[in-house]
Amino acid sequence: MIAVPERIHKVLANAGLGSRRSIERWVAEGRITVDGRVAKLGERLQGRERVCFDGKPIRLSAAKLARPPQEDFLAYYKPGATRGAADDGAFDLPRPRHGRWIDVSPLDRNTSGLAVLTTDGELASRLMHPRTVVEREYAVRLLGTPSPAQIRELEHGIQLDTGVARVARIEAGRGSGSNAWHHVTLTEARHRDLRPMLAAVGLPVSRVIRVRYDGVVLGDLYRGASRALTADETKSLYALTGMAPRRRVSA
Image 1 (cartoon, rainbow, N blue to C red):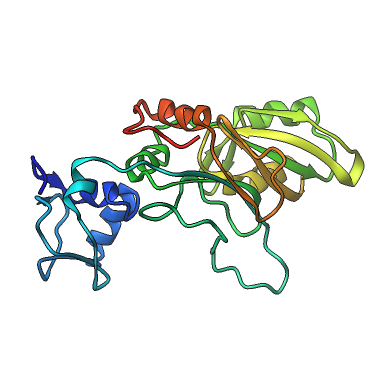
Image 2: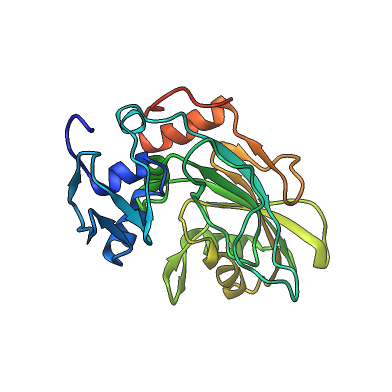
């Protein structure tokens, strides 16, 4: 039983079902029931209710609700889409100690590189909120070298169908000609605007790899591999949102 009744999205996020935003969406879609009835947005739980997601019971043990569990954090090298291969969004990941993995910054099927995952639903919700500024760095293979004028235009902002998109900075990397790599840093969450934004200034993109999510770096991970985040990396994620780790995080 919960000492003070909590809103359903917070209770289920603490239980590891998903992020708060995901749970709110599932409630709105009628996928969550409480004691046999469809749950309502904003309702509060005491922990003794029978809660189901898509008809399957969710365990709300008193110990889990009274004391948030030790969370898991993972860096994963998501491979890019392979021609002719199915893209079901599934990752080959180690099983977390509780709950489920939440990808805090999903990549589209044509973008490979660093995915950051956690079982902390509240942290994931805050990281994915538009108000949270998270630097994301991408290694981008361009067909050409950006001119100073093109860089200024990208930093000032490009008007796209989705709104104004801009880069925080763009730096030259290795290679030249059709194999020129540059590092592009974004502070806005819309990484899907990266290709059209660069194309709008005459810089077609042939490949995009995310190499950094704020303080978490891809490093020497190989495609399809994963590793646990260090204690410093997890603390940096909490610091981004103004949260303190609810319990000791894994090293």
